[in-house]
Length: 141
Image 1 (cartoon, rainbow, N blue to C red):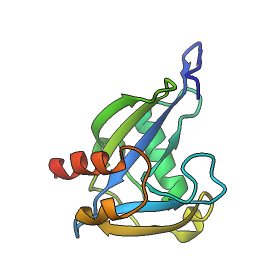
Image 2: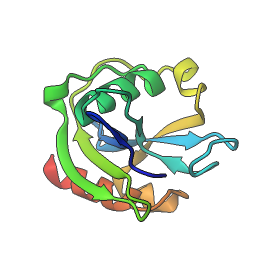
Image 3: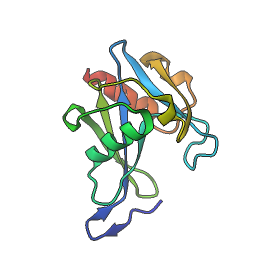
Image 4: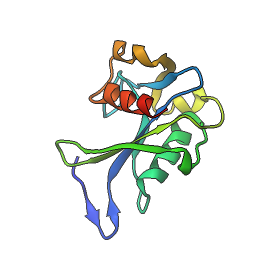
């Protein structure tokens, strides 16, 4: 995907590694019809909207995909990378959130979710740098 700059608009994605009090990471199973990583387990996240900063994207995507509520100040930036096609990916870690995962919201874009032991993430079929993002996040808490 190309990075498009129109005035102040810039397209990018934000992802969040959620770690709960049991030291488990939230993984979502992408729908088989998804454009990106169909059928794979991944982190919460998605693309930006017009005039949205990366943190706001992470907060919005979290609620849309899971029903979890997170305040921007509880997100800790762990990296900013650029994909080979030029899209920026902003990765955050979070261990301070409210609510429980709402399966109705998960089902809009995903087939399932799981809280996975941090040392078991590599046992799942995940896209790209998922395991590295999880390792970075775990090291912060």
